[in-house]
Image 1 (cartoon, helix red, strand yellow):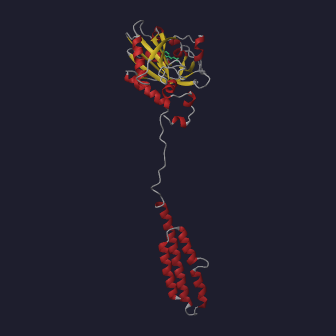
Image 2 (cartoon, rainbow, N blue to C red):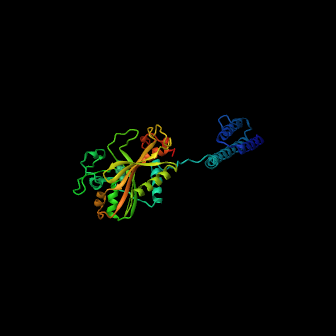
Image 3 (cartoon, protein in one colour):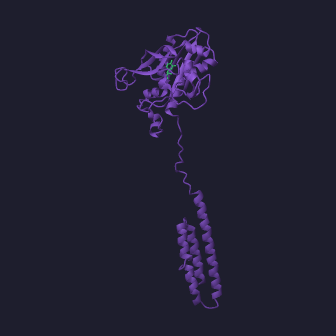
Length: 341
Ligand code: DAH
């Protein structure tokens, strides 16, 4: 029996050397130390051994059992430790962090500002919470005039300022004109992007909040041809070189004369299609020569300066440039739309 025990021990260690997983380890453990395992069988054979030999063999078996148990335990922790390091599959792709991007409206604003900055304009921002003075009065718009209905929006419940009237969310970025002119003397060339608010019901082309970019230049002897040159140059850079441009007479209280500017339809190149309503032209902005009232609001000396101003809708420019048909897409945060830009 002594040799048999030694053979079994050898066999056990050989098998243990080949164990590579917890499942294999368990199989070996059951085979040797299990309820009906090899050692169990040997213990039960002790009773048939000669009585003088029993204590010695019993001791041998007990010691072997301990060695086996110890070996199994060590293997178990070795396998567990291995899982932690070797178990990391370095070939798996890493955790993917989505890199954000600028909203398409922000991209358009930046594109437009860069074009004007290259033409010598400086970008500034004005407040979205405005008062009636800068939103209306300073711009030659009597606040109670019925024509301002489309601009009466989002009045705030703040105490009315005696000099500046009620507070409201601005309805146009033209507010920036007098705010800037009060602070700096001509020559000046300014562009000002920002949000504006109007009491419009939301549909495919209207939103109660949208973005505008205002621009104006003031100096001695600025002429209407300067306005045309700047706007044509801008439109060519923003859309493309081939577009044509035209100016139609219009009315704005803060410019005289006033115009609306159209570009030839970028879809049909002026032939007439669904996008331009078969007209061949697309309206892109309002503009004009700054009204003397505005200079008076700014405190500029009479007749000293002339200037031009223009205002365009960022959503509209973006929709025309990229062929987007519904303004609501900009604000719904649907990533399938936003990821395209
Ligand atoms: N503020 C005008 C609007 O919201 C747009 C505009 C027209 C701005 C003519 C101007 C301008 O500076 O000269 O409809």
